[in-house]
Image 1: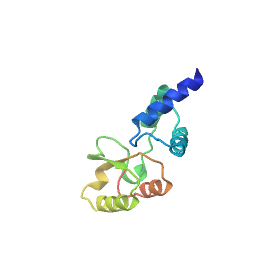
Image 2 (image 1 turned 180 degrees about the vertical axis):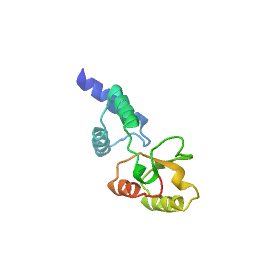
Image 3 (image 1 turned 90 degrees about the vertical axis):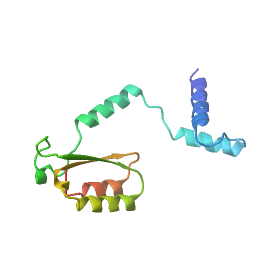
Image 4 (image 1 turned 135 degrees about the horizontal axis):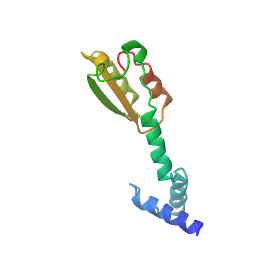
Length: 128
C-alpha cells in the first residue's frame, strides 16, 4: 500500500510538472531522481511553522530606529526576493536614498535560501 501511495504521488508530481512526461528510460530515471528531492510536508507542521515565524519574526535595526509600533512606522514595503542578487543590491541602494525610508518597515520574503542574499539583507542599516 505504501509503495502504491508513493507511485501515485510520483505520477501526480510528474503530471503537474511544467515539463512533458519522460518517454525514455533515462528520462524516467532523471524524473524519478528529481521527485525524490522533494518531500511531502505535513500541512499541520507547515502551518505551525508559518505561525511561529510570523509571531517570532526578527526586526533588525530597532536599536537604531526605536521600537516597532504605529508611531514609528509610516510605510511598509514588502520585497519578494528570488535569486537575482545584483537586482537586489540595486533595489536596496535605491531604497537607501528614498525620502522617509527611516520610517519604513522593510519586509523581505524569500522563495529560496541563500546565505549571500541573507547577508545583504542583514547589512541594511537605513530602516527596520
